[in-house]
Image 1 (cartoon, rainbow, N blue to C red):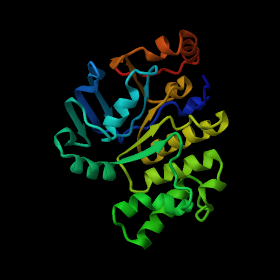
Image 2 (image 1 turned 135 degrees about the horizontal axis):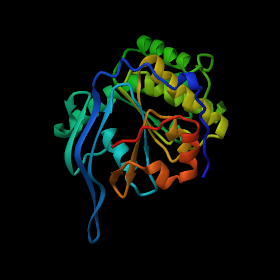
Image 3 (image 1 turned 180 degrees about the vertical axis):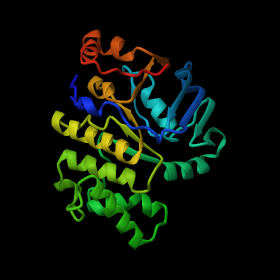
Length: 270
């Protein structure tokens, strides 16, 4: 397993979090089942959790733990079998699929491991896509996409094609695309999985900067213990249930102990 080392200076460990004023994600007794040939497989089993506005949270666990399923539910890409999900004050579990899609397009931005950029569109046009779907006019689209690319350090690459970019640059384009419609939450699924260690570190530093300077709520699904230890909090899953010791149990006592020796606490979801 490859670990990305994301180093945060000691003086930066205490975040200014006055913007954390309310829960932005509240899930109550969430169950998700999938039909199988001989019954149903329960991927999530009575999961209840809260994520506050402005938090930077990791969802972690072994393969098959349910973390990807949880991400799809938070992202309104699927619906729970039972339970209640409140997103930014709206009970989205009671909405129609069309209404959920509208909420998703307004409040959520997605970053994927493999970037999901359209190779024949320029960097600028890739970033504009969420605004095209939102029917924003062309001049405003271009201005907002250019501003998002400036934020991620790619204002000089507007007309480049994705095939000419490095992996790290592609992921920065994907982050700009996630930012361009000013979402309440950024959801990132293994955002460093296709990157080398140095580039992965840079991408996580960018996420942290967005979290600190803009108060962005960022939720990351990751297998990487080093990333998990540098988040505000870790939500651990095992066999579809929440667990409060996923770093020590799954990733090993040695990694966890090293962080304790550095006197950097890790908050773990209860």
